[in-house]
Image (cartoon, rainbow, N blue to C red; front, side, top):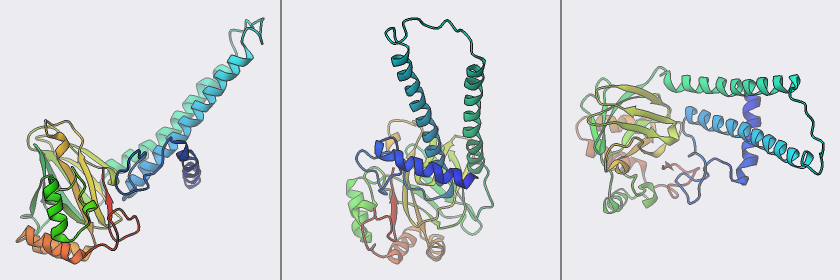
Length: 305
C-alpha cells in the first residue's frame, strides 16, 4: 500500500512540476531559477524528497478545493443569483465532515513524518565514525576509529585563486570546485558505508548540513550530537554551516568526497602518516573525469548547495 501511495505521489508531483510548484533538481549544482531539492544520494534524502512531494499534493488539493468553494459561493450565492438567502445556521453532516477530514489529513501526514524522523534520528549499525567540529569559521574532521585516531583535517574555504590552483593541480574541471563551496581539505568516506558523524563546536553554535544526504545537525559547544548517512553514489558533495555563527558564517562550507572502498582504504592508510600525500594519491587514482562534474551519469557527481 505504501509503495502504491509513493508511486501515485511521484506521478502527481511530476505533473505539478511544470506548473512551477516544485520538482527535483535536474542538475547536480544549483542553476538559475532552480526549484526543489538536490538529487538524493542517500535513502534518507530520497524519503525527504518523497515526503515533500506527498505534502505538496495534499496542499495543492486542499488549495484547489477551497478555491473552488470560494468561486462557487461567489457566483451561486451573490445577491443577484440568490436574492433570498437561507437562514440555516447548522448542518450536522457538514460539521462532522469538516471536523473529520482535517483529522484524517493530519494523520495521513503524521505517519510518514514520524517514520522519517525515526529513520533520521535512529543511527543504525555503522561502519566508521567521523567527528565534525565547527569553529569560526571552518570545520575540523577527526577520524576516531581504531587505527585512524591520528587522522585530522581542518577544512577551510578556498578563494578564487585557490579554486583554480586546486583544479589545475589535480587536472579536475573547474565546476568541481564551486565558488564559496570549495575547500582545501575534504572529508573522505567510502561509498555504500554507514558513516556516523559526531557533531560539536569549539566556540559558538554551528550546524552541519549536507543537503544531498538529508543531513542537518546542530553543532553545540560542550555537547556531542550524532547523525549519520550512507552515500550511494561516488562524487563530491557540498553543504554549508546552517546556523548564524558570526560575520563569516557564509564562508564555512562542507565538502565530502565519496569514493570506492579500495580507494578509501588506500587513502586511509596513507593519511595515517601524511594527509597531503594521501590526497595527492587519491586524486591521481581518480583520474580525469570523462565529462564535466555536473554530469548525472558520469563517474563523478557534484551536489552543491
